Image (cartoon, rainbow, N blue to C red):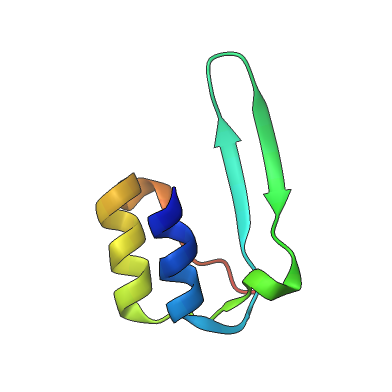
Length: 62
């Protein structure tokens, strides 16, 4: 998934990334390190939704 790292690098910012993975044999919640924080710009969100599906990518404000 080299493209994902490159995409995130182009959208650096102050918003942390959390990834929730659910597979047939495993489930995990991953908090990315500060070096992976992003600016949640429309282009980034749309690229992620195009790849992973609209229902699988969302923003959660705290």
